Length: 513
Ligand code: GLU
Image (cartoon, rainbow, N blue to C red):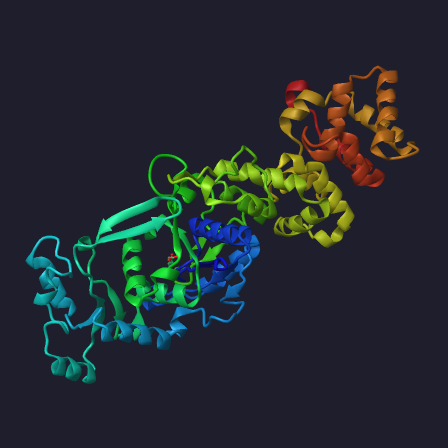
């Protein structure tokens, strides 16, 4: 019988989730959904040295923000828990014991100094079939002595006994069949008595088995561990139900060669983390996509296409559409350049789809940050203002630059626009304009526009100069959306007061006097 697809995202809480890790989580999610399966979240925290407080909460929050829904695991629960490896000690102890009892693993007592000496004794020392009989372990020390040492609390590790000279086959859905010889593997440490915890390899295999994982989808950096994992499944007798592997290609620097790093983000000005991260040790703050004004849908769409395509050149796809189209057949084996400009483009595209009301909500914190109290304006006013300007922005924060004049009357006026547009007769014309505006039967853009334009034509005024001087009074510079859309939203009183202020404040530059 076909087993139900179950995948897991298994991060180690060693810091904020990197954007490459987010893509791994996303591909797991898309694959699970596409195949009617389930997605687990397991926290691999067996390495207490590298544990960072807050990292687990960060991961859960980031996945939630992105809409990567977890079916089972940390924060959700389920039948296969606990889902934090540090809470599964008893389980691992049993499996370590099983390998020891079956002679597939052994105790090793070598101290760090002894290991160091061994490493120095010959080039390319490896703890394996060629050296293990020279070391201090349960293969070389009599059984009663081993027992006594363990009872006395002597620190030890348990090592996996790798038989040399065997071809180990790794099947990867993306990379095909890879065969490597077991002689190049070392007798990996599976357990350390010092922390009474297994190492990554043992915990990972045992959990994938017990949690009934069918597909291990993870980053390329784990590919070298795959042969060892295959041997562990075999040692436990789990080969038939061993998960299929998919090792995803790396995310590469946007420019040049090599793996994407945080430094690339700092250098080129894009975040490499989904959410802002406050390092608990140093206090350093790293930028996040969320805080930089990206919409989660845009981040998802952008990441989905870094290493996969739908088989045609469709670019804009919702999560549901991605699920619908996702398969490893169209995944690339080679690294994907992290084209962050494309991420900005996606964000622009997605912002155009966002309702003005939602955009207004997203813009409110930006207003507050810039000293404007959003509650001084109606929701409708803010929504209409952002609606007029969203076609010009890549980020919500860009709205401040574009739309600030809707919230703060100009205090200064652009020098070059004054020079170009503010003529000697402008103050008088602006006075006259106030009269025209005040007499309008309607302030609606479409109704106001023809009347004002007719007035300009009747008077024989220079249309460009009049309208730009008008704009200068309203906006402070000659930019912004359609002028009658601006006046409609500002309303008659505010429009008139800004024109008056312009007349009083804008003086003719010396060159023109
Ligand atoms: N804990 C590993 C990590 O942090 C998981 C690797 C795997 O998915 O097997 O990436």
